Length: 111
Image (spheres, rainbow, N blue to C red):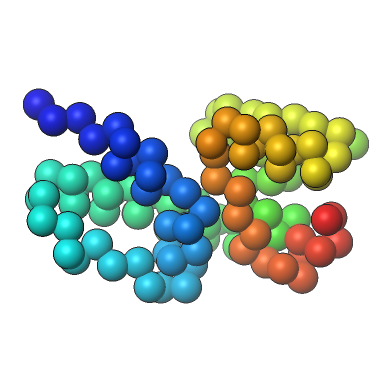
C-alpha cells in the first residue's frame, strides 16, 4: 500500500484552494491514478467547504469565524482561537493549515 502523505500535505494548501476558487485546478496530468483519485477526493471536499464558506462565512477568511470576542479557525471539529486576527493567522500558518482570503472586501473589515 502506497501512502501519499507528502503529496496530500502539499495539495492541502492556500495555492490549491485559490486554484479551486478560480476554477483553474488541473489534476489531469497526474500519472499515478491512485494519487489522482485521492486528490480528486480532496478537491471535492475543499470545493464543498469553500462553497459553504461563501454562503455562511461573514469574515471573508476561509474557516474563520468570530465567536464572542475571539477569532476562531474551525476545521472539521478542530478549533484554533486567538484574541486578534493577526494572532490567529500566525497560529494557523504555524500549524501548516490553510489560510486563504476568499473575499477581500469582507476580510478587509477584520484585517
